[in-house]
Amino acid sequence: MRALAQCSSLTDIALCGFNAVTAQGVRVLRALPALAALSFEGHHHQLARDDEGVRAVAQLDSLTSLCLEGFRRLSDDGLLTLASLPRLRELTVEGANGVSDAAVRALCTRLPALLRHSCYVERASDEEQSDGEYVAPPQHPDDEGLL
Image: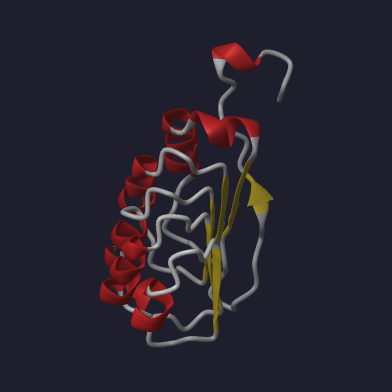
């Protein structure tokens, strides 16, 4: 991760199959001022074990797009820390059994750009099957007719 942090012009990072990504490693990415898209793909990230990793991601305030795949232990509180990402327009959360629809709606209310773009939450069952659903954010008063 330290090597990535030295590439100051990086705008997109997809971490696929890395099982040793930690919250400390994510914090190193704060050195990337142009980082707009971050994707965690695969179900074996150390980051996925609790909300600490999501708190680290929430410090990357340049993000406009975020994919959190396999974050089975993400809670409502962890999801709501993402409200500190003022530019976030696209959010995908997959495998997050601990996230409620109410928390997703609350996040979308705090981040108006998500109201206009994309917020998708997919939960995984105990058998690793998913029952994906789009969680529609509440309609924002300025968005009449957009939803």
